Image (cartoon, rainbow, N blue to C red; front, side):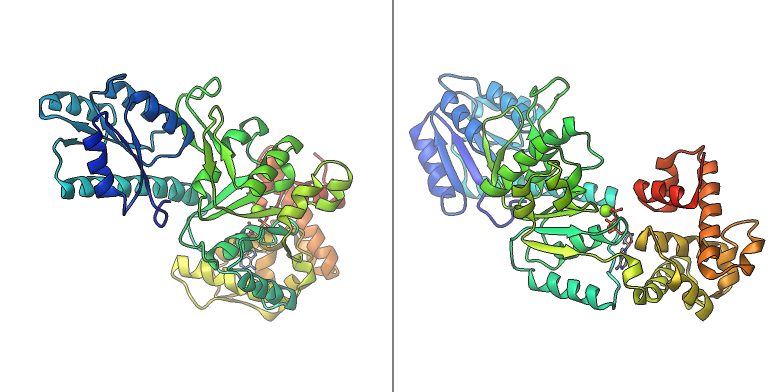
Length: 450
Ligand SMILES: Nc1ncnc2c1ncn2[C@@H]1O[C@H](COP(=O)(O)OP(=O)(O)OP(=O)(O)O)[C@@H](O)[C@H]1O
Ligand SMILES: [Mg+2]
């Protein structure tokens, strides 16, 4: 979003006097570029990112209307203000139908020009914010706080504070469900970039064939099906943070392209030669052992070192069992507040049993368990028996040692969920709130077969 940097305005007019008067009025506030012909204007537009074009309708070598259409095709986010003589007002009105923002009549009034440009810039910023917010809402929708009192977690909170003014990349590693995305958001929210976008790039979910366009954007016609010009996520993340989730899923080719952007801080949209400068802080996450992938030739060592400026390793929940109680109460409070039933808690026995449990799906699994048990159970104190009601037909569990009981419960529950979705691993892992790989390994460990 261009709130703090100077917006760039291109003035296209064949009359030197008009160009110079616009320049006088604008040069102290904006970065102004002048061009006397359609051809010259086009050369600039192909090379530089322009926020607003002041475009004369009658040019010696081109029709302003044609240029307007080409600009809008190249980047719908560039706003065009037509500059016109009184006798051409009909054409100016037509230009607005073709996507021009406004028109200014020559000779112009300085205040009017400044107001129109200001409004156009506001509109541009709003559009960029809407694109960003839509993306945020789709993925998240609400702000969450990080809970933890374990020493390792406190160390992570301190680290997040101490790197808040740095632009160095952050690499977050940890098993599925340990809170990598939450930590990435905290890194952004506590940094000086917090009023700018936090853009998530989900490397596992985007097919590699579309990844390049997702990151860098493309211009209309760049490839079959590219029917309009689209901003890439790295352009949207300008001045903010780009979160590369599941970075290990990027193929080696894309890894090289990403490395280039991190090093050179610039890139081009697909199909375009125009260099886009970017000021982005990179935060990446992975639940894989990246050094191991480097050894196998699946991950580039140079990219790893570029990203690993500030490494954060989130321990699995079973290595910080003290946090289980805090998290249980935290998620129960969230649930209760939403349902208008505050003041609920877990019994000591239930807390002890759940603290013993190994949580292969980590915090996400715990969160889902609280959600289910708090929905099913009506009592204000949730006890061991309520955990048992999570699954039907578990009458033998009470005679078993805790670990076996938990395993028996988990086996039965996973089996029920799998049956309910016709053994789709993808759907089941969504319902259970664990990563697909966690589900597969638990199925093997517990001996669950189709
Ligand atoms: N310390 C924590 N305090 C509060 N909530 C947490 C904490 N850690 C994780 N969560 C919650 O647990 C869920 C899973 O966390 P998150 O999505 O960040 O995990 P992840 O490490 O990115 O997992 P994956 O590798 O599967 O993508 C989220 O709903 C998150 O809000
Ligand atoms: Mg994640």
